[in-house]
Image (tube, rainbow, N blue to C red; front, side, top):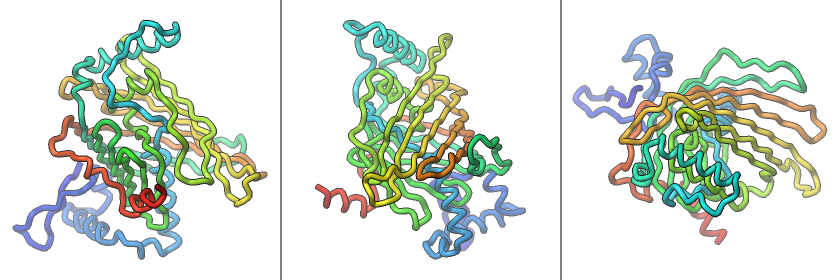
Length: 355
């Protein structure tokens, strides 16, 4: 992955460190020569202004990319994971079902490095790349086929216990920044037409794809529902169910599934049913490797099916797919303070005003 951009103004000038590393495939598509590719990338970076999205064609393209990145690249889990607690917890005085679940988690903890290794993790930084493909919306029972066009990109994740995190995701020129400062979650795309979405503290789904064993263990031990959904009165999470599949042979998490039903009010009438969005996601987790005595998943594939129905309209279905891999990961990052996870200024002002 490309992490720095040369200085084209001065040959002896310092290189520019990219906020989000660019995969080789995305970099190669920017021109026929290395110099031309860097010049095109520099021109693209300077063109990230609100005027760029005034064209309907460009705005539609970025709205489509934002949809893909919100649904597949940076979804949240509406559960408060107590990642600041030590794991595991005693199995005694529990029901058979609860005792079996805790036993499976204890095997998972041992397989990922052990209790001492997981409790020693205080922060993390991961750099990775991904490819996303999607189908168009289809009605009813029509067959759905994914397009051959894949959108390539990269991401950087910062995480500090208990629930401070930040994700920067760049795919085909569209950037999504999402984070949590322990009080609110927020998310914003590079398309300025999309407002900032805010809600209560929640974990990023990508952490639960084998990237953060400590959060995974705490989630499946005794997860608790987070109070409320996003801070928008027109949104309501009706149900959200999660499944974790652990290998009997290795004890590791090999598949993670979640299903969500969301109601969106499209009218001011409170009695109106609105539009329902049903999202089902399945992640196959692969390539576990030890990093600083902790066993971390380094690649996987996520398959998402989105249903949209309601308001006397026919059912619409869409399928999406993401292939991801981790290139670098490091734990206990020195100097990573809570100030790093501050949300945009307008999110802070709105929270203070609401209190």
